[in-house]
Image: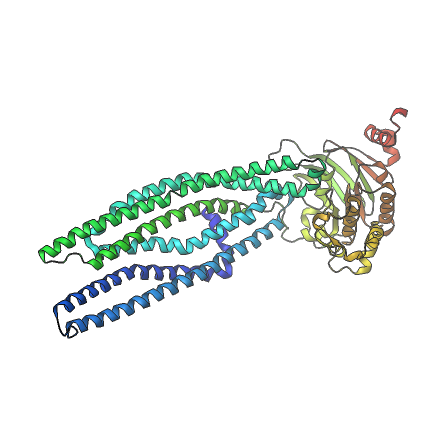
Amino acid sequence: MWKKIKLILKSLRQYKKDAIVTPFFMIGEAALECALPFVMSMFVDTMRNITKLEDIMTPFPYENGPIQLEISLFYILITLVVMALLSLMFGILGGVFASRASVGLAANLRSDMYKKLETFSFANIDKFSASSLVTRMTTDISTVQMAFQMVIRAVVRAPLMMIFSAVMAFMTGGQMAWIFVCLIPVIGLCLFLIIRVAMKIFRRLFKRYDKLNESVQENITGMRVVKSYVREDYEKEKFNRASDGMTGEFVKAEKIVALNNPVMNTGIHLSNVLIIGLGAYFIGRDIQNGTETLTIGQMSALLTYGIQILMSLMFVSMIMVMLVMSIEGVRRIGEVLEEEPTIKNPENPIMEVPNGEVIFDNVNFKYSETAEKNALENININIKSGQFIGILGSTGSGKTSLVNLISRLYDIQEGSLKVGGHDVKEYDLEVLRNNVAVVLQKNFLFSGTIADNLRWGDLNATQEELEQACKISQAEEFIESFPQKYETRIEQGGSNVSGGQKQRLCIARALLKKPKILILDDSTSAVDTKTDRLIRRGLREDLPQTTKIVIAQRISSIEDADQIIIMEDGKINAIGTHNELLKNNHIYQEIYYTQNNQGGDR
């Protein structure tokens, strides 16, 4: 845990001075607040002495003694005002610097976490759910921010206030201060038990947050499906269960934490009763004996110190609750920051991909080291630069897993995978991925204009290049039909365009990268066969040197490929041309005749 705390504190950076300065202001504020009751007791006793002398010395009450006492009273009053102003100033400065440090830490922490996420491979991302990552970057960081602000302020101030007040109580009231020594352990034990029970509940709350965020995320992402199946009531009930579960835990925790106040109030009232009762006894005895072991000013100071000691003890207990809540957040944030990307750049990477040749040599791959079965096994493929390769297979046969290895979204465990004559692990990651354009099975567009989305492929692409890419992908026609054409606004996730339009825009975006290898992972499934044919013809004519690898469900999309790879259960079942496979491969035959309604003619 300490390692994770140190990792998080590295995000302070430019706010480190603010965090260091804050405790010093808190020390000054605590010292002055503890000194104020002592000076106030002097003020009360001086006022009492002036009243006594005025009663005795008549008709000239302001000669000698009274005058000196009033001068002392004036200086004490000035001292009180100065100390109060200094204490206020230290408190304000401490608050300002603490706020700046905590807000800065949270901002840097979010930035660091986001940058870390951007370095993750698919294998890293698979370890964390999207809803959990959202919770870690929002709720967890906010909790850590509040805890950090409390630490650099109250963790210094509260214990010091308790210590200083106890010392001043003994200096002021002598043996009367033993009242606090007896009360503190009893109240401290009660607070400890309250915290211990509340801590267990707060730990469970973070998992509840994840479930709640997951419910919200699923509903927003799948809103069309929810409405089309009229499942709003079911989803509302599911959300309410998650929300009510979290609310119930919060109520439990808050009920337990709320016991702090009655425990502290009981302690304060009990100490006041004991101090006033014993104080009245001592003062009455002094009046009878003509002595003065305890003054009224000292007794008032003791009352103040008692409140300060017990309130500081309550602050310490609240700090412990906040720290417990933040520790879970620290652990979850630390998990992300400590996570090492499974895919890294080599020490001396190759900075150029010569061509689009791809060679799989006895490749074995599984998604996790603990997985019992390989996702891909004994893969041997030789793809020449510029070839058009089709991949066909049932769901779960390993088609997407195969193409994900080419751009190093995952790393293989056994065998070798070469692109352009070099092992993919020898390339600079950015260089490799810029030369291997992938249009994923799940197309995604970002909020912004069509032009903004297309320029993800090439930030500096000209308007002519945008139009040419859209012409090849058959997106030009529908873009031109929009009033604002390439400046048409795309909503988040591309929710205001059809599935086929989204696919064509994603293909155009990939083409702007001018890749050596273009991978289409079932990326024309939502377009009609005519448009599909036009896209393939455009790819052949305009990108003759680019290796084109197309995963498809329709044989018509890949029947003119140079090679067609049939995948089955993570293995290569067959490789050949359309005519070869139609003659010799039963899987290909079954798919072909089914799609062409010729199942009964075999």
